[in-house]
Length: 174
Image (cartoon, rainbow, N blue to C red; front, side, top):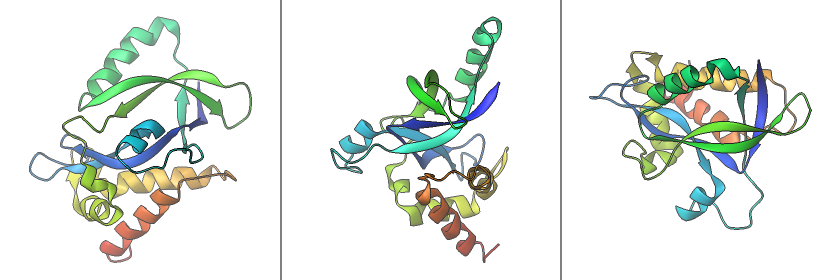
């Protein structure tokens, strides 16, 4: 089963360099990663005591019989500096919160590029990068379109929408 869900205490950022999906070794792209509020505080991007960050994404329920194979596939796909965290997620459709596995590229991994936390710098990369999985801008656009389609009242993804607008401007208003 798959369902949209919310995780509190984590924010989404385009700060993970991608040389194998949305960029190349010669011209890396950027993919989204999740940073915990404590990580954001440690690197000075969040003040202690601020309300928790909120991010919306997809949760997938995997049958126990398939778990080992799915985890092996995910670990291979997320090999570029990602770690696993167990978090509580809230299904957007309601229901009880549940544990989920979250892959996060930590700020100390070699592909994390702190300079990309500047929206103008990230937009410049995303606007022009292309990799084996396609245009970097398409990746961002697919994410923002999906988020808008959810029609969630408390959608706290303004940073992503602003990033998309900056990329569109750099691409000539596409």
